[in-house]
Amino acid sequence: MSIVLKAEGLTKEFKGFVAVNKVDLEVEEGTIHALIGPNGAGKTTFFNLLTKFLQPTAGRITYQGRDITKMSPADIAQLGMVRSFQISAVFADLTVLENVRIALQRKRGESFDFWRSETMLTRFDGDARGFIEDVGLGEFTNHRAGELSYGRKRALEIATTLALDPGMLLLDEPMAGMAQQDVERISALIRRIAKNRTVLMVEHNLSVVADLSDKITVLARGEVLAEGDYASVSKSPAVIEAYIGAEHG
Image (cartoon, rainbow, N blue to C red; front, side):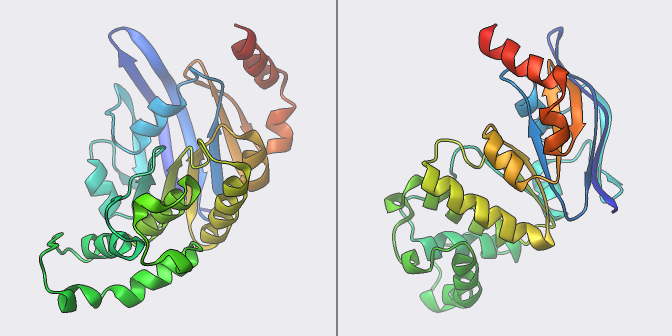
């Protein structure tokens, strides 16, 4: 498989504190790659470096062979590498349909002119409804986003992300704060949308990681502790010690 996203020697220091220390990462095309680790492992900082919400102190990031180290989040989104956030980011006062329609407007380079005529906006409705069906929200198309359950808001966020037509989807703790029923729904959704996309996700729920991931990178104290499939990393003495130490430290 070809390497879609690659980090080489990625480092981030904050006033002398090294949060991420010379981390290498390779994400293969068409896989679900999970980034895990105990609290304080540097996962969020590393993820923010990859998605360009932080600039590295040292190191290099390439996406599809192109150096993106100094690019902005908007620039890499245009290349097809799109991030969703840990906290659901939808327009609560707009309907499900209107939320996805805005993403389609953005993808096609149009401004978010809410005062445009309904006729101008409704030409996006067919595609928007398709994405809404894809994430299992068809019966909620005309509901206000703010009325949805937390899990369905996350599904809507994924629908708006898919409307941007990403080649690679980066998910920041997609199961955070969810009830088990929602976890199962979003897990099934991620598995379905990953069939023709590459996914990198930070996730605390290890049962989700075990179920979904093709490859896992474990961070601890800002460095790569282990890498491989779930069966191998879960049996690693270093990984077990890191998690147990974090719980009792």
